Image (cartoon, helix red, strand yellow):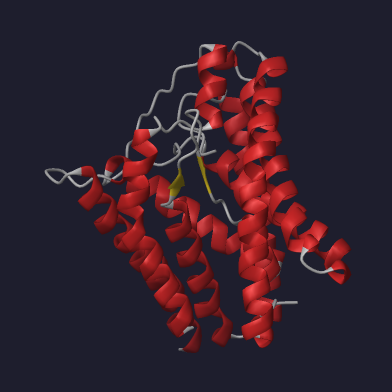
Length: 88
Length: 206
């Protein structure tokens, strides 16, 4: 388990680097390419608490670092919470 | 592959929510029956690892890029039912907290990445696991490929995409067919590592 947490931490620390590299090559996913070809528009009615992994006022790379740790913390909290509820 | 709001017609959103809710409900039942409380943190760690891996957008020169999805990997490590729950938790957090994938399309995103990727990956792995590393490789590759095709069908029968299913399915299938090789290699790498170093962790739910 300990090694898994280390691996997770390493990935999260690398996330800003990947975000920067993806920007360099104009990151776009196949789904976005398909949307462009078909002329589809997205219509996001709700954009989350930290839209697109950004924290207001922070640059995108620091945001990616912070939101990564945040997401992992929320997910772990949910499962550990379920475990604790189950043990009661 | 996270579908944003606005891409899918309402009836597809509803149908996907219903199908996904049924599979999630059944998965909860199965996991409750087969796993004890000690395994719940392991599901959480796999989910957290997949969330972290999805933060890494692999840049590919030529403008298209992708990130690891991980449904097949989760299925190999946890069994398909716990994997569906792990993937669902990742997609729900991505949607609600980070606006990655729409709320109306969350059911479809769960169907593609937490159900199709998981169960296809698991079936492929199970069929081929006697043949060594090729099993997790093809599980990762085919899981993501079929998930992408499912996504292509859903958008292709929607009015926003002008019902251009003849364009959306090939676009998704070709791109993710190529990018899926990375998913296959990553799945193979992690499974091989765990099998060598922590054989007792392989598929705790099976």
